[in-house]
Each structure stands twice: as C-alpha cells, then as structure tokens.
Image 1 (spheres, rainbow, N blue to C red):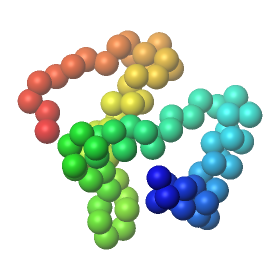
Image 2: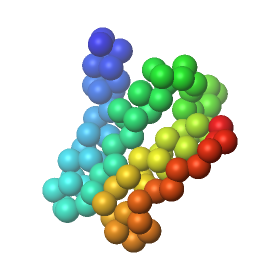
Image 3: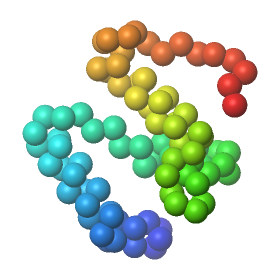
Image 4: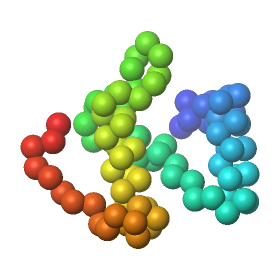
Length: 88
C-alpha cells in the first residue's frame, strides 16, 4: 500500500524502525502494535487514536493492553489473561 510505504519512509517511520531495531539488538522485547491497531480498525472501523492529535484513545489503550497481556513476560508474572464479557 502506498500510504504505508510513505508512513515507513517518514521521519516518524524511520525513528520507529530505528528504535525497534536498536531495542531488539540490546535484548529488549518489543511489542509492535502496528498490526494489532490495523487489524482492530479493519474489523471495527473504530479509530485507535484521537483525530486531533493522534494520541491513543480508549480503543487504542484496549488494543495495547490486550497485546501486552499476550506476551510471555506478562504471562510469566501474572498468568494468562482472563476474558471478560461486557467490555466495550
């Protein structure tokens, strides 16, 4: 997709790539939320950030929390995530 290629080539895209590569080289686990955010938007048509400043909104925080609870470090500390009903 041309938009995605432009995003990766942007300053923020290059900064994101640099940070991810450097963190992994140093042994840090990186939770890349890009695919999870894209999947959420594709499935629900619900934004994960505010339109006016691109900070995460409640949906974005929900996606991030779900992804973090799926990581091995989280599960080794707290166990597998519990599923709940009635969440928005």
